[in-house]
Length: 569
Image 1 (spheres, rainbow, N blue to C red):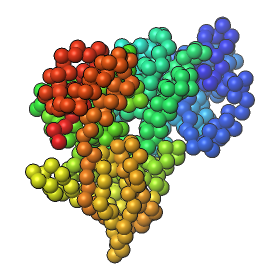
Image 2 (tube, rainbow, N blue to C red):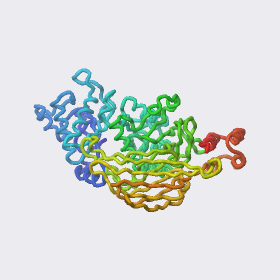
Image 3 (tube, helix red, strand yellow):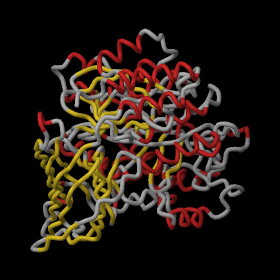
Image 4 (cartoon, helix red, strand yellow):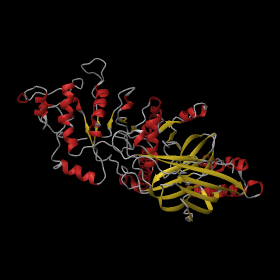
């Protein structure tokens, strides 16, 4: 924010508005910006334009002359976005020179009322319009970050919701706020992840906020200038740091999936983050989970926005799962849909469920430049049903039209077959097909890896490219709930087919899951042993009934209930 001169002559007012670099902080602005660009980073500068242009600014004399004023008077030039002459000088003298040395886009932080000389014209709405249109000159793709200016302003900025307070209440409001904004077409909200000011330091709160940010339309960490409130992961202790880094890298891996969803929002007005009732308008339960949302076509996110139980160390959230089968993205656990339930997670995890049949295109390298289409992809395959996805990309230049779009259609077919009496031992055959990529400049050679969620074993994997078929190797189970198949670097121009024969899903293991919960819980050892004895002797409703008699502390019973009732098979 304070890239410009802030400590100015008090006779001129305060340094809230400014356009002249503070050379004590940035001795060589052009060199600084060039260095950031060399690291594949882009730069935005924050501006508060309400105080106009004052005589300490480097561009003051030029702006004055453009407006027919005598710069020798040193009089303040008032901000007037309703004036075409002022707006032209405002852009050409105060913004374009910074863009020429490397500023990529602007963060408009208007906080100064809704009135201009033109009745009914909101200065923030006009600022958003003017800057967005101006940012598209010379064939660039337009982009600004700004505040909400009322209905209809969704057409311009990536939004930021103002200065949030570092409290659980603020965090709890943000999932609802973000998803519900899709009702008026405002898809691109960003928040001050972790809180901007106020509140108190809370490592658990900050971690849960990081998780929400990674699964939001825009992930933007922010804080005040306080020495105590900055958001680097290493400021929150070893446990939080590990989790924050994991979710930041997950965010980067999700970019191909999210970018595809962004293309669909651009062409079909389907919000990348949206309330459950957008996809299930006739289901009353879809309206009962305001903090839950859909992320892209196939992910369901139920953020945990309250503190965890101090005995089980588990956070919890009430969720609703639509009909079908859902897989936890982190553990691979299967859930039957068509019901409400309470989900419990350690701090390291968040309820993110993928619908059966989904294929999620992920970047293989979380540290690669996200502005470039990835050379290596991980296709995260969710078994259990037919499905697939469409990977949508482009070259990042100019206006985003369908003619510029690059497309790779991916289909997944799932064919169950029972190999045991009564269908108890079920295998399936599956086929993953990548159609030939289309679109100008589309990548036709890529390194591909399959990750199979919730899969225990695959008897045989065959990769077919053109006329060639070869076996692929399924990596050993590493305990993550995923199995990996490295396909190598493939020519995709004629399409690729991967045949998975004899796929077996990971069977529910209530005993192992219950032991993991109890092992972490800070409760009596005798009670732990009593619970495990019941788990070993009983199942289903009988087990739940027996456990209920123990009056288990905290949310332990709920967590056990979730495990036992996750799926019927």
